[in-house]
Length: 141
Length: 311
Image (cartoon, rainbow over all chains, first blue to last red; front, side, top):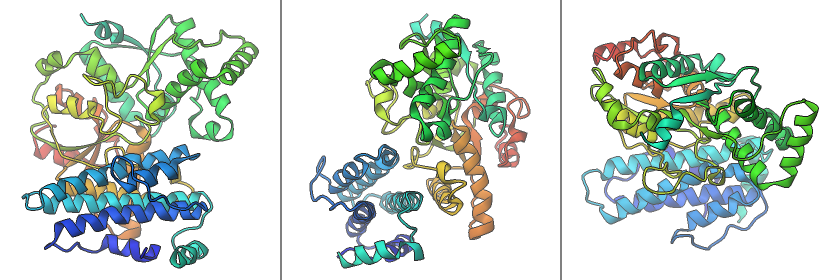
């Protein structure tokens, strides 16, 4: 179930579980999908379940950028999440895994912050009181 | 001599408005390294605004005209076939105008109509090539020769290279990128990394090199900009960087100002320094900090540069 926007923001600030890097990477990739879903829902679109290059997050980004070229400013952010996800899943025991997870968390946070900013500028409300209708809508979904 | 080396030896210089104000150190350092490397910059006289975001948001065709006028001046008044624009906003807008004039009838009509009213020749697609300062240095002064000119170098300074969002997007206006070989990548740009590695820096693995700095939100939503910038600064530090190298005056000013704002508003302290890549290259070439305008940056990097014996 999709968390509330506020809960997602808090989860991205919290430390990641150190003992299961694959689960942490999956959570971070999924958090990127959630951020993109909020953008789509706010635009009265149904988030796609399709995959692009094997990843839903890339398909969601493409869907979100339709008719909104400036949304491409987060294209590479979404791709970086996929990059780190692959690195961590392929070599979970690699000595760089803690660092890779930390960088992936920051990338996920950037996507979240970028989309929240875009939503506010687009008059879709901010991630606090003004976004209440959007949050309620997404929580009901 | 390679084709590009010959072409880029003397270029029309379009610094735009930011490099006369908040981005002055970028202008100072670009001119200083051009002089040092024997690359000639010829200022475009009577230049105008590229249309930036303000005009583009109201009427994109007028923005296309404004950028086309700059290219028309370079071609028709100066006889130049290369325009170098170090500002990402100007670079992006000139490239966009080039693309629109080449591909859209409406753009051509508007450009011709306003040019006729303004009494100057309308710019025709392909009359000039617009390049960034990164292209200019990378290909105007080939890498091997640059290596030979490095004095002292950057002594292993750990750098996160930050390109911002306008240098590579949208991909269709940069047909020369993503062509393999020595072309630039829009997914993971590397020209700045390449140049600073030659200058003796250690480039850290930095995943937010093209991420949004919130520049467009600075006035309308400063808090979002501060959070975006803080995340970039913290990611650079987490990646081990001592310095974030920039190549866009908007990004650079945003990083500097929101670094201070993050401390004031969010009590979030970051220590990473923000320096234009041209300043770093200038230092590596043996120019003094003053010559490359280090003292004009808001981010005080002098103690770090002194400690590393770079300054």
